[in-house]
Amino acid sequence: MRKFSFFVLVLSTLFLQAHTDHYKNYNKIEMEIFKDNEKIGESIFFFKKEKNKFIVKNKTNFSVKLLGVTIFSVNSKGTEEYIGDQLISFNSETFQNDKKKFVNLIFDKKKDKFIIDGSSFQGEASKENIVGNWWNHRLLQTETQISPLSGSVKKQNIEFLGKKKIKLYEKEYEVEHFRLFSTNSNLPDDKKLNFEIWYDKKIALIVKVAYKRLGLWEYRLKTVQ
Image (cartoon, rainbow, N blue to C red; front, side):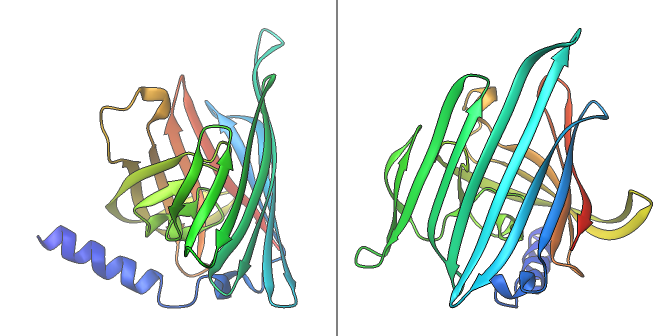
């Protein structure tokens, strides 16, 4: 009970401010992607205010090689648009090796729901869902997320693991450490969510993400502009 109460207290202090307000002074966030401690790519987020809209664009590219031959690659681009804190549209196109994945999402005001046309899911979803991109610390608050690659809706749990200091690129961060994992433990391993996340509430950014899938994968915050 004490652990749960402390977790609720941590979340309440993380999200007192309006979500998009946290990013109004940011223009770009760059994360580098590593597999087994070797850099394989990057994920970059661009932020822009346009009249009453807040727009986030993302480009993610990485490739895994074995004996000089590419065995796995992802090239992805996407755009999220918000009015206030409400996501009103999301579009993405991803090439995973030679396979194309996509998401086209809109917020239907009359239904008060998202309408999703994705490569893995077509249908309606609650407006409380968060697109699962690493710029967005509300991933640590929601019970469900939408895959930014395919549009599938995934239920999740969050576990608070404690506070600590970590160092990235010669910079030290004081972070809260979380585990994000699938509610349904019976999902196939390649469909499960199982991430460790380090969040710095002073800058309102996720600074590191790690998960294991045929090796150790990490997203590390490199620069913020």
